[in-house]
Length: 430
Ligand code: ATP
Image (tube, rainbow, N blue to C red):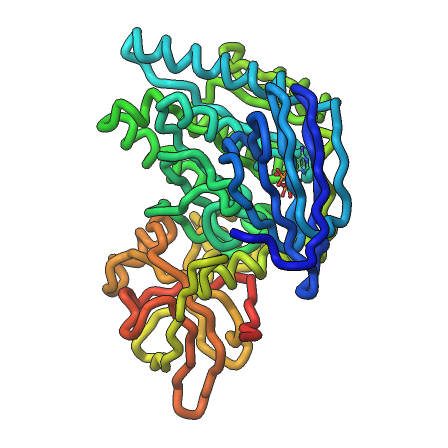
C-alpha cells in the first residue's frame, strides 16, 4: 500500500462538481500512477473511492476522479497529464440515471420490465464510460442490470471479436472495472461489424432473446433492465445495425452521445415510444489512435490467458491433432447473386459455416471453442448461435504430423471440438 519510494506526490484540492483528469503514459516502460483520496468523497466512473487507500493505474490509463461534494486527492508518480476541469456533463449523466431509476420503480409497481437502454455515438465519445457509470449507479441503488457489449473492437467483457452479456452485481472495481463472472459470449470473429453484418445482427438477436428469456424467469433482472454498449460505426450498415439492435432488444431509451445527425436519424426511424436523448460527451474523453486500440485489444487477449494485475493465470500449451477438431470460419466470401445456387441468398452465405483446413496460416489465430455439442452434420446447424466456452491461440502448426500446438487457459483435453476461427491474431511474447 505504500507508494514506491521516490515517487513524486502532487495534491489536488477539488471543489464540488469538478473532476481531476489524468493520463498514465503508454508503453511498457511507463511508471504507474497511484491515486489516494485524502478528504471528502469522490468517485471514478461511478465507483466510490475509499479514503486512504491507494489505487494503482497502469500504462495508458485515462482516468477522471469526480467529486459531488468536494475532496482532496494525492497522485503519486508522474502522470502524462493531470488537470482539474469544472466543465463536465456528470450532472446530466446523473439525471439520466435518475430518470432510468424512476422507470425501474415504475416497472416494479406495475409489474412491468425495467428500461432497456442503448448507448450510441461515434468512436471516442465515452460510450463505454457512460455505460459503466449508469451500471455502477444502478447497482449502488440495489438494482441488477445487465451489460450488453456489442463493441466487437473494444469489448469490456471478453476478448475482441465477440459480443456478450454480463449480469452486473456490484459496482465496477476502481482499478479493474466490472468483475467478469460467467458472461454469455458469442463468437463474431473480427473487430468490425462490417466484415459480416448479417452475423453481427444475428448475434445481437441471439443476445436479445437470451436476455428476454432471463427476464421472464428473473424479476430482478427484468426490473434492472440492460445497458447496451455499441460500436462507433454509425453510418450505412453500422446505422442499420443500431436500428436492428433497438428493435431486437425492444429498447425504451437511446442515449446518443455527441452526434446530432445520428440523434435526428434515430428519432426519425425508431418508433415514437422510444425516448431518444442527445447527451454531450465529456471533454475528458481521450481520442485513441489505431495503435492504441490495437494494443488495448492485444492486452485484452493477454489478460485472458495470463491474468490481470494481482491475479496471475498460468495457461497451458499442448498439441491437438487435426483429426480431433473441426475448424470453421463463419461466412463464405460473397459471390455475385447470379452465381448463387438456386434458392440461396447472400444471407445464407454470410452465416454459412465454411470448414477450414489447418495449415501454416492458422498460426497465431485466436479460435473460439464453441459450446455446441460435438457431433456430425446435425449439430452444425446450431454452431453460429451457440455461445463460446473459451478461447485458444494456435502457436504452431505441423502439417507433416497433422498436429497443431495451442495456448489454452485449461489443460487438455479441449472441452469441445468445434472451433471457430477469428481474423484476430495474438503473438504470445511471454
Ligand atoms: P470506442 O470508440 O472504443 O467505442 P468509447 O466511445 O466507448 O470508445 P470510452 O472507452 O468510454 O470511449 O472512453 C475513451 C477513453 O477516455 C477511456 O480510456 C476512458 O477511460 C477515458 N475517459 C472517459 N471519460 C473521461 C474523463 N471524463 N476524463 C478522462 N478520461 C476519460
